[in-house]
Image (tube, rainbow, N blue to C red):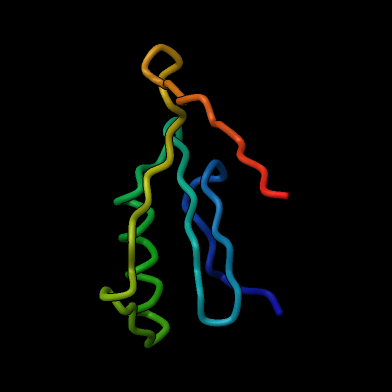
Length: 80
């Protein structure tokens, strides 16, 4: 089944599974997260769907700065 539910930018990705949707927007995207989300809200309104804002979350992923990233050594204890 073909859907008209697509991101505004080809750099952004929408993953859909059943009633769960994930939107990935890279830092270098040409369309902002807020613009993409507004388009999703507009699409939902046109299609008589409701976005549950209580279940809507924004997660920010970033790589740690190499000079500020410090892993403490891990000691391994084995029990015999």
